[in-house]
Length: 143
Image (tube, rainbow, N blue to C red; front, side, top):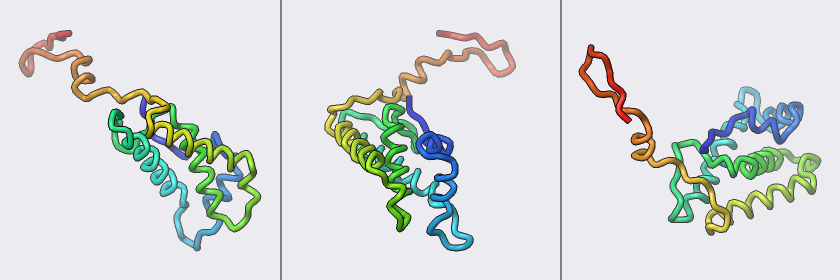
């Protein structure tokens, strides 16, 4: 399944107070939260690793394979934390999680970690029932 990463997903990897601090720290008055841009960046990064292997197909725009959700969230957490001039949020386990995430993405690009391919648009269309009949008449489902 292909998913869209959200701020709620990021909360699974950070405590709410941490996320609130990371969204507002190191920003100028009136400057928006960096989180949407970081989510967008990491989404594009994950998609680029997926696309690096010619046998992979990309799902709909702004989506990533759900098998890579944790890797993407670890990357988001790391990128958020590196914005700050303090190292307290970048604990050794978090650094290791980021390194492991990048390794997993490289494995996807090398086809050492297989992802579920998105359904082909034609296959998805064929799986849906087709309506026959004319406008205003009783539709008949054809499978």
